[in-house]
Image 1 (cartoon, rainbow, N blue to C red):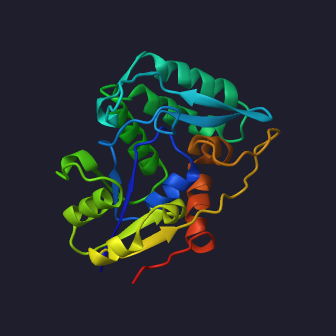
Image 2: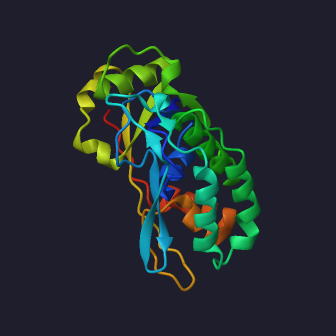
Image 3: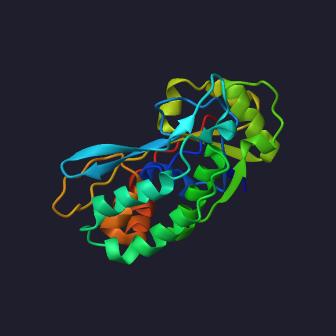
Length: 241
């Protein structure tokens, strides 16, 4: 059976859709060697704050054309600050007391070598806590030269296995060339994610927040169920050949 491979930047405590993609893949590749993009989800994410939302941003030093794995932090005390914000924001959530110790322990173990290392650690820890099954890889471990866009993705996928299906987010259909994937013998499939609405206590529901928003309101198992429900209700898979 073909391995399903997905590729994505190592984002900071990302949204439910990111983990839905992880739940649908055999190999998930952190694209850590592409240029860091300022004001992206690579070093920031939204959380709820009453009836509105706010950003949690990892403070970083950035140089032009710098790959993610070279980006360093401008303040190594940000995990403590973010943990304080999370506690203040979600202390009244239904499952706060059920999950807080494990969230605090995770933040206490964050490695601060660089942005890619940190975010890979957080994604892998969250995947484990959500009881999802996936093997994680780093794009920087594979020599792909100066290839870009589709050529980069195809080279990565075929370097991992000669029998693979590439799983892309639905947005990839806007810029990917299916003929390139077909010519390389890599079936291309798209994964859509219909964001579920879940109870948020007295607060307002906002789609696209960090997965931790769901965790505080639903617990680890409740969030896992929400992610896995999308396997039957939210997937739209279409092969190119």
